[in-house]
Length: 55
Image (cartoon, rainbow, N blue to C red):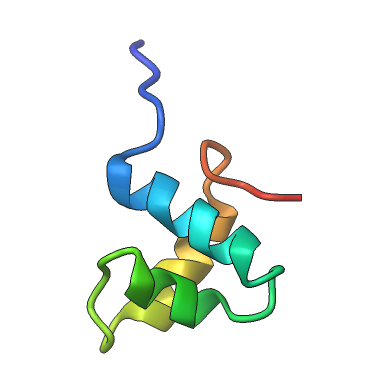
């Protein structure tokens, strides 16, 4: 099984989320390039992903 690292969008999400001091995951997802319509659910899924998980 091949384990891949995070994508560019996922890395951008983490960078923006940390810059926002973990205050607004939806805004971080939009800033990372995810659709504003799905940003909330995308952000939730990203934070559940062990590759992207931020503690």
